[in-house]
Image 1 (cartoon, one colour):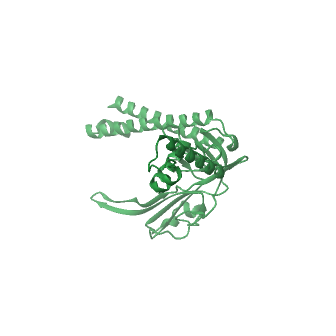
Image 2 (tube, one colour):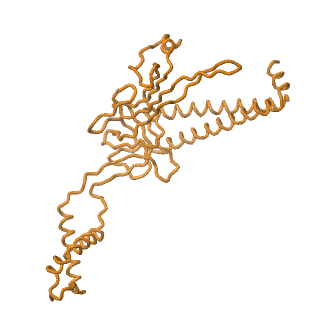
Length: 314
């Protein structure tokens, strides 16, 4: 057989490279299968929460994506309105050598959105900070051009795109992924509430700040609290100063309305739990992870069998 002859007649260096490549593929595929099964287990074991009643900490949410108030988010390449994007611009380089010529795509520009957006369910809305998330987009477009600045999104479809008509003679490739307003959104991350009635208030720190300001106007403080007019604030007078500062802090605090609570979902800090955002339902996510893990497992088995076969026929 040709394969047997190739393996048995290969030099020690080439044979070692074949075995090493097969081993690396087997290990990487095994790790990929394990990672995806672990992620699937996390999805299964984490119950879906409702925003209104969600507890603080690591939770799972499902709803749909919407823009926050203010200026919309535009995808850089297509200029389409979205709530999240990731893009890449590549240029084709041709290289010549004694064995012929070949071409490869090299990245000349790329970026990812870090703007906040809303996840909305039937009970409320939660701001999402996508920084550091593993994101699965709902839209992915690839088109070609002759400039680092893309033209309009290529509309070639069907067999035209399949046979590569849209890329002929074009040296730049544009890839853009997006999550758009209204898309279903699955999220797994760290849930925290900021502001509201539970906002922490450090009364002692506020009192110290008031006293510091009063000390800077020593003449005014003496005029108010130096009852024996000896030009100094003694211990008894200092008690009166502190009591007045506490009274002012409490009065100011009662006039301040607590800021409305804001729920935020973000990266689990100091935790190995995954931060996942996907424009899919939980069932779709679990199905995707299941088949991806199965594919990686099959690849790991095939690579391992190939390595053992090469070692056996050598």
